[in-house]
Image (cartoon, rainbow, N blue to C red; front, side, top):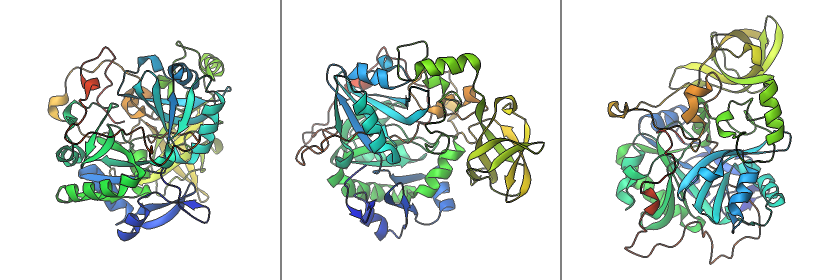
Length: 449
């Protein structure tokens, strides 16, 4: 999230005036006034796939879990194995209800053994905060959302743009790792995560420093093709990468198993909220599954459109678009488990027409890998987001990391303490990224965050 200046009931991030100055088209999104596009969704999408894009995602939330009981609280709250996190590691995971429904999909940052940070979806901040507080046990919960801004730099040119601005050795900052350093002379937390299907970074800074960082990044990337990107292209990018979006692929009536996110649900590990219900679902099998669809006729499959088989409804579309990269229409949909196999021929109802669709593997798009990267596969890890498990999730979504998000609403920190998540860096003395040294924790596969 970020500072809470509002117009009526709509909030604005610290970068609102920057978006206006750049000519962005502003829309309401989850209670926020956010840029949906600048030049156009198609152009911005292609910029991220071919060069780089800069995203304001300061509407997302950051919630800290602190104290000697922090790890136990996070383990109880989430489906993944918190014990596998080392300092400086990020883990994709989910908050579930007792019945297995998804409260939110989040990323969890381990700063140290007594300090964890949830990054949560913007529309779920208040709900997630209340949920985390309800199940906090003896841990202390602090909401940093108001004090924190989040800027995402994504695309094949992202590392080249960021490298001259920071002393951090980016070649050693692997996927789903983070470190404190400076960016353009500003204290920042640099995380190698994202929500586009491309390599990239997410930069957490104190909200008052957001404009300075945004401006410095745009200037540094101008010659490399960097462009500001709105929420419209962010959605088409994540959909091509088959990354789930809360409110579309995930909600409180949907389990992570049905969504193809079983890799991030450790049913054989420590107990967590919803484990019993998910064990039962695993034993009997989920009645529906999330699949990828390719349209074999004209039209776009939108959220809520029925999926049919021989005239009977067998599912529903959760997200759909015309893929700028593929040049064809694709969608994600829940269908009856018996019809979820790759190659299954179904139909989607578009304005009274039955348009043929085919179940296909996901993700729909994978970023090109350098030839030298064709080395033996890295040990399996459950830290990274869904995209990293695409092959395994076929034909269901490969999985996000939901947009890195965090949530929690506790008394706001004093203004002079703003974002303790981003500690001050003494001038000329960037902190040594000790956690980038080899560790015993399994390294995540190279892949999208």
